[in-house]
Image 1 (cartoon, one colour):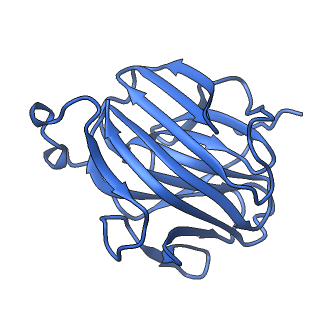
Image 2: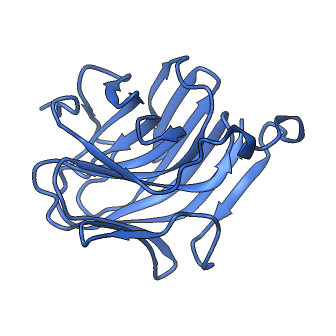
Length: 217
């Protein structure tokens, strides 16, 4: 069964905009492979946006992890860090703590604002895909619909995710296996971060992230 991401009407909340080009890291000082950020979320402030919105959604530090909470349907929420660099590799360990398995979990790169970014997504029922959000319109780059893979651990089991944004090439690895690689030239700059999303019934979706690493490509 294929999950149709494009049929959903998503509303995105993000409270940390990293659009300012002046905030970009100087490319002349960054070498390929250089580590830009390592975060096990044990420290109180490493530049992530922490927020709560009217009991509907929240991002917080809980027990040395970054926890994202979503209680309303057909919604994505994003948190970004302070690093703005176009060509990157991100890794993170992630697990759903509570809520529906019919969800979205993953990364964003080249996040300019809520209407422009790339997303690397899995669901807790085994689906995956790469999306492009451009001027508020979502497009799946990986296929017509989110695709299923047995590589993805389901339900509350943890997954290790890797996303690469390297010039026009976008690649997504789950549990050390490459699931998809596509090319796209539309978005060339922006920040990075983490995303969760809901479909019809979020059932108080709670997702925890740990061991985030960001390096230059």
